[in-house]
Amino acid sequence: MPIVLRCHPGIGPAVEGEALVAEDNFSARYDLDRKQGVFSRPAHKLHGQSYRDRILVLNTAKGGVASAWMLREMKQSGVTPLAFLFNSVNTILAQGAAFGEVTMVDRFDCPDVTREVRTGDRLRVDPAAGEVTILNRD
Image 1: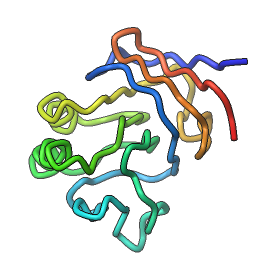
Image 2: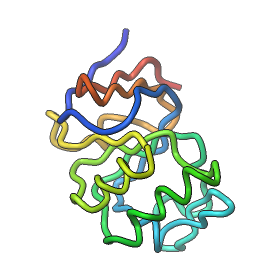
Image 3: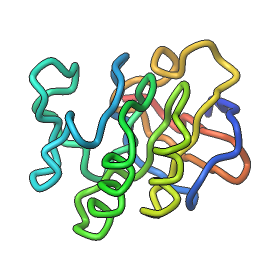
């Protein structure tokens, strides 16, 4: 049976895909190898894992303008996540998601989205409706 999580209305098109989850923060500038499509910072909980075409579920975004324009660069190169789900996100990264046409939502009605969604879950993210549906669990 699907589980629906409610969130603040977000940015980008509705998408469906596999979740990659960590109780960690996110910086496009410092955490990623944007050419290979993997988490590259050794201290990150997702180090070595591919983010390409997956729905990233993380605590919060960190960083500024550089992270924002990097989302657009990632989208143009085709090495990008399908979507970002955050407990909270800063306005600069939200602007970057809009500029890069990357789906992003935050501010869930649950205390911590990284504890509700599991790596491997199949998700549907509908930013306009402010909903994330867990379609099935692996």
